[in-house]
Image 1 (cartoon, rainbow, N blue to C red):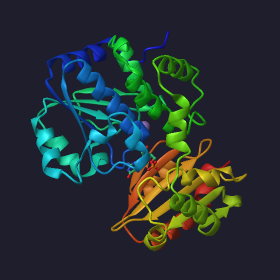
Image 2 (image 1 turned 90 degrees about the horizontal axis):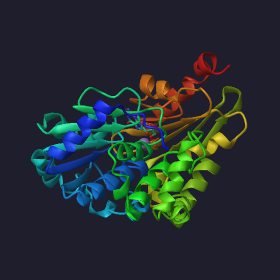
Image 3 (image 1 turned 60 degrees about the horizontal axis):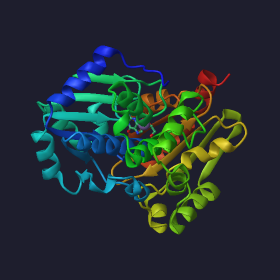
Length: 342
Ligand code: 5GP
Ligand code: MN
C-alpha cells in the first residue's frame, strides 16, 4: 500500500473541480524541467482519457531532451504563441498548476493566471505556496510533483487509468528531481511507486539514457570547459562557483538544457557543501545553487539573488552584471561559513 498524505476533503474538492470542468488548462513553471513536464503531460493524458478537453501551456521553450516525454511536444509555448496561450487560459474553466508555488514562477503567464476567473488547483512540492489557488495540494516533503501526482491519482482511485505513457511521464519527473534517485530519495515508498510504474510499462532504462546520458557534442564540451576553466573552489569555505558569459555560451552554441546538472558537479569535490552556477542572460543573470547537508541555498538565493527554492536546490534571477553577481557570491563566502557551516 502506498501511503496517502492528502486529506479526504482536499481530495473531494479536487474531484469536484475535475468533475465540473470541461476545458482544462495545465500550467507549469518557466524553464520547464522533467518534473514540470512529466506531471503536466501525465495529467493531460489522464484527463483526455476521462473525456475532458485539456491543454498544457508552458511559459517558454522545452529543452530538447524533454521533447521525448510523451505528449510534451503538443504543449503550447507562450513565447512563440502568446495570444493563443492567453486565449486558452482565458477560456478555461479549470487551471491546474503543477510544480510551482507562486504566479511569478510562470513568468509572462503570471498575469493571465491571477486574472483568470477559472477554478485554480495547485499541485506542487515547493515550500511556502502563495495564496492564489482554490484547492491547494502542497507537499514539500515529497521529492517531486510527479511522485505527489501519483499519490493524488491513487487518492482519486484513478490508478487503473495510468497507462505506459502516463507511467513514463511520472517516472521522468521522479527521476529528474532526484538526480536518478541519488538525492531526496531516502523515502522507501519511492521505490514501490517506481515498481508500479515499471509494471505499467515505463521503460526506466530508456528514460535514464534519454534524460541523463544524452548530450550534444557542443554541450559536452561546454560543460567540460566550464569545469576546467570557469570553476572556482574555496574548500575552506565549503564553496564553489561556476560562471559562464554570453560569449562563452555562444562559442559552444548553447541551447536550453545544455548546462543542466552542471551546478551539481563541484559538490563532488571533498569539502564543497554548496555550489553556485551563474549564467549570463540578455537582461539578468540566471542563478542556480545546490548544496548537501543543511546548508540553505534557498536562503542565500532569496536574500541576495532574487529567488528561492528548496534547502538543497534553489535559484534566482539576479538583476545586474555577471561580474557583480560573482563578486557578491565571493563577498558572502565568510559570512556563509560563519552562519551555516559548523
Ligand atoms: P534550477 O537550479 O534547476 O533552475 O532550480 C532549482 C530550484 O530552485 C527550482 O526547483 C526552484 O525551486 C528554485 N528556483 C530556480 N529559479 C528560481 C527563481 O528564479 N525564483 C525562485 N523563487 N525559485 C527558483
Ligand atoms: Mn519539481
